[in-house]
Length: 334
Ligand code: UD1
Image (cartoon, rainbow, N blue to C red; front, side):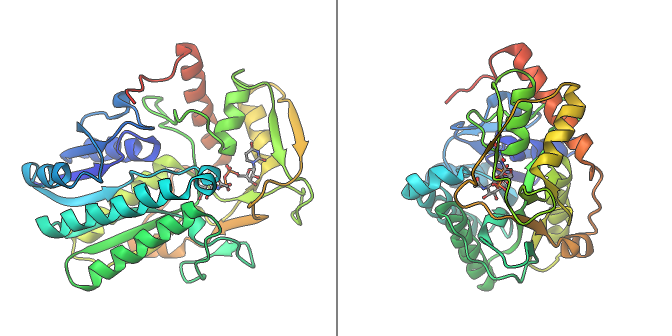
């Protein structure tokens, strides 16, 4: 019986993908070092605690579990931290990916799905990126992911494997049934931060920049619900299993919301006004970044189910309320 290896399957996005894979009857093994992931988030799959940089461990897991496909999420993802500590990002995101790819090639794993990011585009001229938009990352996080993309394409060009690279735009929301969610401490992402404020974990919420050349002056992003994003991974796996060619695909809805629109949605969901502080622009932020996601829809026959900001925010808030009730988040074993 073949199994799917999910690295980083105890993290925010990986755990939602594991849950969907298990729900459709896949056999899944997770490797996660629990540095930012949570043991309790791995539902219905075996968890091997360790690093994808540990070649011996990865080779053993690939062999013992008869792995035929790898979905690689394990990574550091905090942009400002990547600027302060770039080698941490190149070490974990790039070097450990090289190790994982070498292990996969050695074990004959020929299907690889990679979590990439819209950060590979950097500042675009139009604010809309398709997959052919030049990649010019402006921080080590984006560069570390782009370097991994390059390695993956090059190893696939040898005929060793086929890949799907998924470039995520702004992932948000949580499992609508509230079983798993986004538990990362010290989050900086807008919807998570706004929901933390809505449940009283933060005293206020800051808007970084109100003087952008956008209709209400605040930044616009393409927020995609994590369940729709997870579904794209399952489609990608089916595509590769059906013998499909290697692909690079943007993951977003193709339209965006401003910071003020997000805040309004959180106020509607929580039924209370938020305390909002207007601050200058945050370094490195672009006015607008929206995905052209036509290729994802065409090539994987993917259709979003949750393209609704109010729904996204309600699921994020539901999870935040659960975390607040528990007062401590899920058990971190880091
Ligand atoms: C972040 C990453 C990006 C990654 C993406 C998806 C940074 C700088 N960028 O994108 O590389 O691809 O997540 O994981 O970390 N905002 C506020 N107040 C806040 C937080 C955010 O006004 O407290 C604004 C930002 O200025 C921006 C928008 O909200 O206009 C979204 O920001 P955020 O959620 O941090 O995501 P990005 O920076 O777009």
